[in-house]
Image (cartoon, rainbow, N blue to C red; front, top):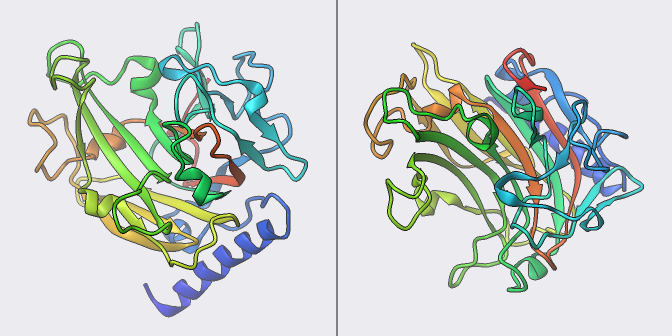
Length: 322
């Protein structure tokens, strides 16, 4: 990246974080430079606008955020605090870890969901603060998390791997930020950033596991930032997704405060090849055919505050909304 582009990107990131430090919830303005360079200049989601959260759990269309009701979770309204500055504090849930609000929810309608899931590529970014010492505690099995799951798996039943036996799914999970890295001799400045290519027949293909998991090497998942990072102040966590084409590889890159962190993930265009994803050039390529539901949540006793969350895309034409 040339020096001018880097300066612009860092300047935008610094402005965003400084605005949050001043106590306000940052609204979307210009996309980060890497997003703009990819053509992602349309802000298709900006959280949390007044009235954008289905606080009464109506499960009706028209909201940007719903209670996280996937996998049997039933988060409690009192554990989601809407702050006066427009930020939201998550205090955990007893019915399932790391999921309290999502951009979609299951519904008894023809589409099988309400809300929105994002497709066709995007730059996704949230500003988050939390207490790392509390987050490392063993009070619950959850932790501060900003992640996404394929709507095709969560709700619509369209994750069937074409050409495989009925019930054989393939679906993508993207973990933009999870404060779950707590290994020997690791400081508080490590968090997880991962991509999963799940596949198989539920509880059959991989004994002892719901699905088989093809993911990044653990050494790549471990994301280190400066040891002086103060996580009790806002920092931004970003995710750039560029779909593959016939002539160009797909790509995912993670970001911290506007700077790239970790290795870039690439893949060849996926065309429902029959092999398992491990070792294949198209591993993670199923992402390009699916739609991401964004999810926020944490564990009990590990509060996390989200000051802003924005999605930039070339358009919203490839999103699913109901």
